[in-house]
Image 1: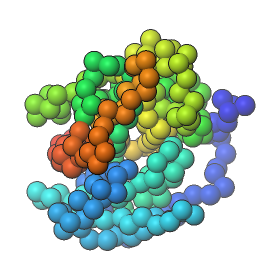
Image 2: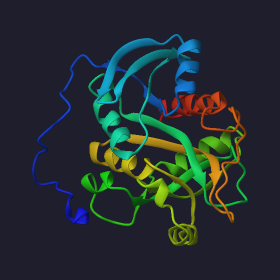
Image 3: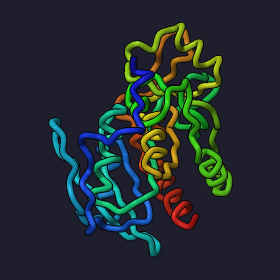
Length: 254
């Protein structure tokens, strides 16, 4: 069974090669949005440091200077296995221990407006990847939630704390499962959070995570809460990259 697959007693068959010349950076920021990727490339003096590859294509990995720091940046792929694979593999290009994970998520509470920042405190493990990086359990704690919350408060950024539901199967977010997760205290649903926390725990890395509140499940019918072509108050909003960048600067000094 998948709950029996965590194996800490034997080596993996495939590993990311150690790269002694990997570019040292103070933190790595990654996005799921091609719109944000274009915004960062156009506005932050990015230099290409390498490439990540999979069967679906290639994504460039960049470094850029900012306020005396040097940060890594790339666009990752959606869904837990692909996102975790990129976190694993980017360490062959960038020498980093701190990662900023931000992106869009569904909302499980109608009182939370679209575009509101949500800081996850724990993630329900309704995906497969995390079970290969951590012993089985329903939830995995998001260890740096207090750091992210403190940063939001210190910068006057409105946010809400709560658990998140990480699932591989967004077309199987059923009424019954929605009710269970909401009763647990989940306020968001997304596809990578629990797995990213698991790989970072396993590899001794630090991840700092927040989401942009998006489509609403807490209604009689699912609603995207977005107009055609809307960017503001979505995961493509460059303002949320600016929050991620400020957070990277904050954690670089920890």
